[in-house]
Image 1: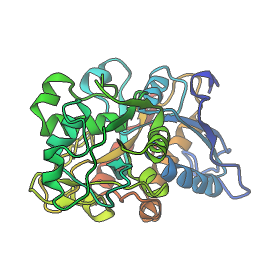
Image 2 (image 1 turned 135 degrees about the horizontal axis):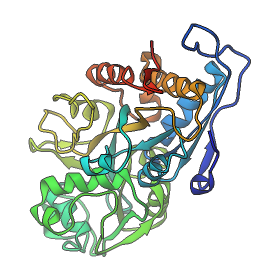
Image 3 (image 1 turned 30 degrees about the vertical axis):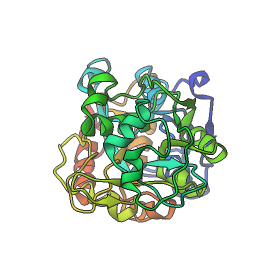
Length: 356
């Protein structure tokens, strides 16, 4: 594979080194040579990917490098055919898929976008979707707004300006967040809509989930949306959010998993925000690795194609799914794993199935 890494060097992490263990088998049961794989994209699942890619490298001898540059950047690099896979918290739309060769979406875990805040006067915070939407639309500007007070009876809410923090880069986290806001607020849907990038009318921008988390941690009276892991890791408070059933729900492995109790299409492209399932945290999501259905592109070898699918199967394995909670994510439902394994069987190299 040609190594054109200039677009993805920012935030690039080499996640595995070749081990002395054996490699995965090739088409005829022969041991294939170790190869290098490269990916780029979402920062939301980065802690889970760091851990998993290191484990895969130790077991397989392959070396995986991943640049946490945001979902939009990862998809662009895949479209330009300079990576083996892209990470994205937003599935590709029908329009996006028309602009590139056929792809396969492989969900890897579930997570949540949490509403993190820095409010010294309050240790707990309840919010509803319409209130969150109006904060980021600039309609609610003070912490002691009557609508916030109504959701938090007895709380000490100061007469301080809200400082909204949002992503500056093309982001699947932004897509998940604004997809949710578009479902709970007609004003948000009609004025701003859902997307990896949105023209937020107020607030401060930061790059990546780590950037947003860092600003919130350092800025009193700020509020922003981040992947749950970053709030957990930095001990940033995060709000309980009212779901479609009127329940105030705190993000957790259980409440995130509850959001995925519905049907899933064969290609796994689906949104689970604002789920009406009992106990569901309303800003839950899947995150995906995206690969080309035809793996012979940009001078890639059959060994690289095999290694790419070996990595996908590793991410779907029971042993890896059981580790998701250790880094504050939730495992995939059985249906997502089943559909993904079926979809991997459609991946080809020169038109022939890679998996036999």
